[in-house]
Length: 596
Image (cartoon, rainbow, N blue to C red; front, side, top):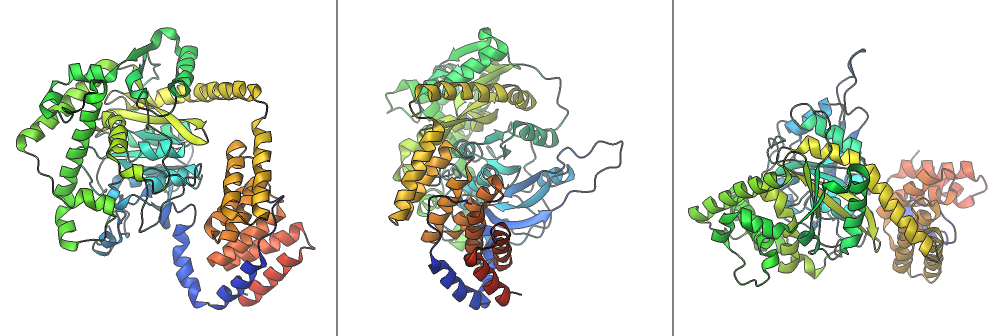
């Protein structure tokens, strides 16, 4: 996906290497099997499940007509093994004999299912990294984690490879990747959507959720999956800012809350805004927490309730995961990532009294939040506590990082209340978001509220960006050009990684200029990162259909990936645009002779 300007053409080295690859025809099959790894590494398997024919007029068309979606590799698809993010699991399990009812409902609703996506190993991580199948690339921040467990599903939506996707949210598996990838994510009320046909992780928390970039699509999926009809739309009468939760965030509070406050005032009036110290509220309304006080040594009483909930959630998840899968782990002894292995290979023991107390906490927390929110209230909290960490960062395994993240995700996981993630642009070039929560069973109300507020939130965000822009000496567009020129200088100096970084900065500042994607593709080609180069070229071509260099570079990338016929088409189209392009002519002729 690239176009060009300012960066040198790809090295002739790739053409020479291409000759060698093209000659080894036996490699083609092996390369073609890896087609599922293209597209930012989101997919583990590609296929098509087509919807039924449209009903004859005057009946209305199917509600999800023309939409495409992917599912996390936790959902059963007839004829495919549900992989669970681990190759040993895939080897030791049979193909599913029927498709998950949730997937079937979406297909019957008019959507086309196009494949399965990567998850954390055994869906037990929150980073989205998977050493067996590769880590899906965070489209907005490639050097950062995409978030997990349903990283591939989030990346597929963020990269616009599908219109929406399905995941399973246990302790944040939909909400975290939505926050880190800058897209919408919805975790319904616990039990609102069928759990049949998915691999169980922790039965007390497992909830089918979905991702999209368009709130109307998120809403349409909800109309299909949520039982019953959507009632007459109601506006929220209470919008409650959880002040202490925002103090957990490393992102400035004003950056997250001001847009929500101004949008709320504009739509519903100042009178609906309220503030709450959620830790204190929970401590007073959930007495069973005292019987499970995991933070007696923690002198910071302000956050003790939230951290206690985080500890309870982790403990019960491990207990239920072990109940489901310990026998298989102990028998098969699979190759597991050390971070996952450390958590799942020891069988945790919970006394009956502890389980009774945890169940009491779940019930009390749901009652407390339902009482706070009633039928027409939403709670505003940060989705995650920080921008996405770097890939492989040590902090991902630190107790402090996990406890802080789980302090936020435990609210919906333990209470079973519904939550929607709303992206709020970038902060220091990384995605940021807030979440809205509604009472258990308030799913339709929450999706309606999202539809009402989304445009206003984006407008207020644009207003803030506009104010910032006019106050700066350099506009975003000018800053993007500066970043591009820095990238060009790094490219000429053959510092490919540095060039990619500068071109990425230019894209973050201005994602509508084909040149930036094309130049980054040139650097990716020099590094041998052909999947990323192909993706950048395609994006550049989407932006500029006459970008000759983008077609040539995509042809080069596709040849290296083994997609020879696609490469021939790209080289030939480059010749249509520029008939005197000798390199494109030579490449097209060479491949046509080898693959007539």
